[in-house]
Every structure is written in structure tokens, then in C-alpha cells.
Image 1 (cartoon, rainbow over the protein chains, first blue to last red):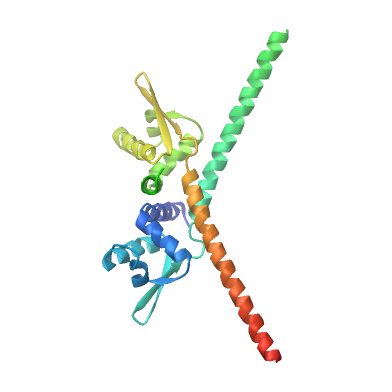
Image 2 (image 1 turned 45 degrees about the vertical axis):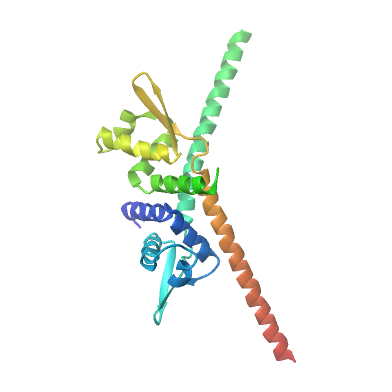
Length: 119
Length: 119
């Protein structure tokens, strides 16, 4: 996967999650596969809107679908959210290493001024 | 924080991250605070666009800004990405517990049929 593709995929994955109704569908599918009408039932939402939201989740790599006869069933994609998880943990590691360096710098400065005072 | 607020905040946070330019700004700010013009310099982007992207990141709770004289400086918000991180880890825990139950069910079934064959 090249960097450009990677960026586009992260864009689509984050975009898919930026909606409470879509996150609700992820929660429902976390309990097991479901058809479009099963997903629509608890929501105050027309079927075409549900279908649109599911397409956004599928484009974001978060769900997969398969058609059996006239029924399309959705399920969580294997490894869904792994890209989000690793992006977040990389950033946090970066911040922590920055904070560690800052802490090191501050403790060096404190030691230096203490040494100067001792002179 | 009520559920509705919580949802809206997650919407804004995921939306803020759904753009490669904005994620690039998060990377730059991970190395330390920066002004708008410092953030704009490496990007092929007009200042007003940079300002807009930063406003989206700030609305998403990912960065903070402070103005000193005429210069506005941005930095990573403390606890930024924690909401994303906990949302993802809750979902993964849910999927794993579902898979555990499925595995348990399958191993129970296998044991049952083995017991029946033994009879």
C-alpha cells in the first residue's frame, strides 16, 4: 500500500466513524452479523438512509457485506479499526517521547543551576 | 457530559481526523507548539485554509490555541485522542467477548457431538 492510498483509506475510515448513527450500526454489528432491515428496525431511519450509511462504513473498511438471495448481510470486517488504533498509538508514542525529552531537558537545567549555586 | 454531547464530540473528533492535511498538522504539533505561519510553511496551502483546518481540529478537541500579541500558537490538547482510543478499545473488547462466546459455543457443540458418538 503506498502512502497516498494509505492516507485516503484513513480519511475514509475516520469519516465513516464521524457519525453517531454509523457508530451505532458498528455497535449493533459487534454483537453479530445483521441484514439491512435488522439494522434499520431499532432506528428511526428510512431504509435508503441505512443503506447509504452502510455503504460509507463499507468504503471505510469497517464492515463487509455478502448477498444471499435477496438479503444482504453485514458484518464487522476483520481487522476493522486496527488502522485507527495504530494511527492513534503512533501519535501518542510521539507525544510521550517529546514529553520525555522535555522532562530530561528540564531536569538537566535544574541540575545545572543547582551546580552553579553550589559553586 | 450527557450522551448527546458525548456523541457530538466524537462526531467532531473523528471528522477532524478524516483529512490527511489535518492529520499532518497533528504530526507537526506532536513535535511541539507552532504558530499558524509555521504550520503553513511546509504545506502548499493558503493561510486561510490552514486557519480553517486548525479551527476544525480545535472544535474536535485535538488542539488548543492561545494568542500572544498578534501571534496565535497551537498545541496538542492534553488528553487529545483519548476519546478515540477508548471508543476503539471498547468496540474491540466487545468483539473479542463475542468471539469468545462463539468459540465457547463451538467447543461445547464439538464436545456434545463427541459424547453422542461415544454412546
